[in-house]
Image 1 (cartoon, rainbow, N blue to C red):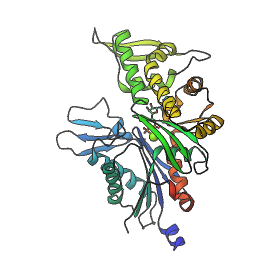
Image 2 (cartoon, helix red, strand yellow):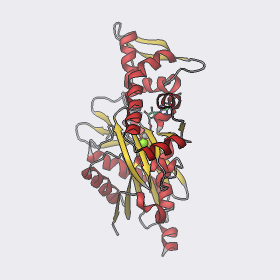
Image 3 (cartoon, rainbow, N blue to C red):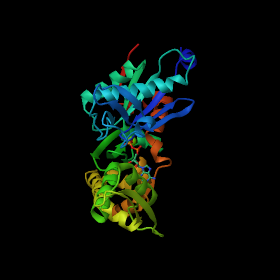
Image 4 (tube, rainbow, N blue to C red):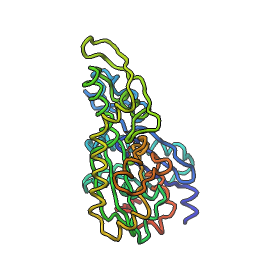
Length: 346
Ligand code: ADP
Ligand code: MG
């Protein structure tokens, strides 16, 4: 039967992130990498666009259109919209699999703080979107597997996944999460800090996307060899006219300071609540950073300085979770234990 499924069906690994959704088709690669955004008509609730197309509408929508990030805070704020988004991405991925008429097996990475009701909603959504079998995995576990950590060994590892809405810190050993912490301080919070800084410092009102651009270009968590600067465009709060200001990486780092402090504290608190044996393993192996936020310049240095533990950014941190889901699908026999839920529909 194995050959039959290989020939006529396929497997999908999905990272349902607060900022981005990624979908991997086994044997093909990552086929979808789009923002977790849905544009709806605010009067009728009708979905107008999903993903890239919907993100382009943020901040530019007439009052009749609302751009929603249904998972913004790592909890499913809107089940209905989340389901529509998941369904859209599963259908889109299925398009590249014509001829494979047997519905796919789907594994979905979900935030570790998610409730039973929310888990059920994700399973139901994937089932209704046509999955023949649905598995759930906690994102930090998927991220650790995707970052090539040896999660099943009797050694402690620590992964810090800094996404858009949440940062998840997890200590993993023997295929399970030993301790974890989730805080709502991550990429979005960094952007917000830059928006507030522009307002207070320059009376300049900037949008979320401009703040993100400044963060990606010159944001950092620790002094850089060569500090940088960039232009920040927005609207002057006093004159009401468009205005451009040059900001430096030193200023932006100061704006990010409180958020970075909170993030570092979460890592330290998690380490403190870890058993001495696991702590010793972590000390030997180091801290691994995943998620888009791991790309903030010198965040690894900052964490390493604060904890006195070597810290590394995983290769391609934005793809760790989806790569992890895929590895689990490829080795379902040996890795089944890391999954937290499984539902067979047919
Ligand atoms: P999630 O898993 O929550 O969907 P991601 O792992 O996709 O989140 O990361 C998205 C976050 O990473 C966003 O806040 C984005 O601004 C941030 N990000 C992406 N690239 C960079 C970069 N080069 N420097 C700093 N932050 C980045
Ligand atoms: Mg993520």
